[in-house]
Amino acid sequence: MPSHPDLPHSQISLPAGDLHYTQAGQGPAILLIHGSLCDYRYWRWQIPALAEESRVLAPSLRGCWPQVGHHPQPGYAIESHARDLQQLVHGLNLTAGVHVVGHSRGAQVAMAFAHLAPGLCRSLTLADPGFRFEDEPEVVPFYTDAVKQLSKGTTEAALETFVDAVNGQGTWHQMVSWFKEMVRDNAMTLLSQIHEANLPVTLAQVRQLRCPLLLMGGTQSPAKYGTRQDRLQQLVPHAQRVRIALSAHGMNLSNPRAFNRALLNFVQTSTEMSALHS
Image (cartoon, rainbow, N blue to C red; front, side, top):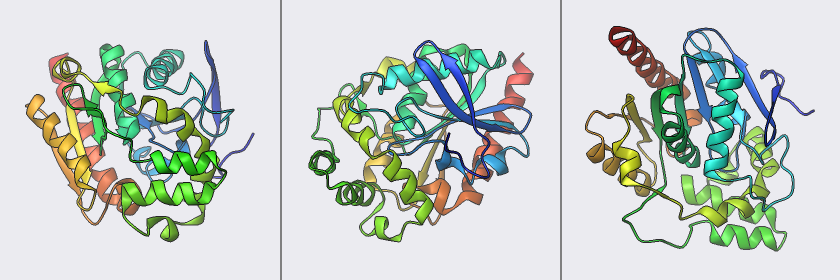
């Protein structure tokens, strides 16, 4: 089984199959949900830092490395991923719940988790969410060209197209080798993801949120991610908002210290508030 030298590998058997994850630390549990073309390795700069104060749990969503499988596949879907994570939390006996963190597409999985299992969601952090709201028109997915390139077998060009679209022109060529390896390992997941590209988040789903909510964005992120946060802040008055300096969409990688500090502060405050109301 492939692994990462600094991230111990674990797996758990769920009704839909094995789920792979890494974990570290003790304390309030934080569940990290990666986005497109990623897996639990994406959180390599978060796990050791957060584990100093918390129990950190980072899964690779079904259909991602180290068990990618053939794509497209029906199990690679927002609702399926959220259900897997609910079962993971139950399977690890985290009865007190988890502080849920979702990045990019992972933010929509996090929203689905909070809706599916509100009693398990102690707080919710959405980092550069990109989902569509139900009252907005459907759009052609920005990664349509990347999917076409993948279908033709031009994987490297497809990944450059995708990564540059979410983080800025020229990003792919500047990325370090471990990140490129991870993205290549998960390239074919886009063939599944394209089928739910316009899956909306309902306004009722957002308004029903009762847990503490943190909205995070990079100061240099594409504007479309900021509009999602603007709308969420309007719909959820109690939401907090943080912008991570000197970073774009991959804010947890480009400025991990600021990202980790903001997240830990939010988790600590949320935990203290929960204790006061218990």
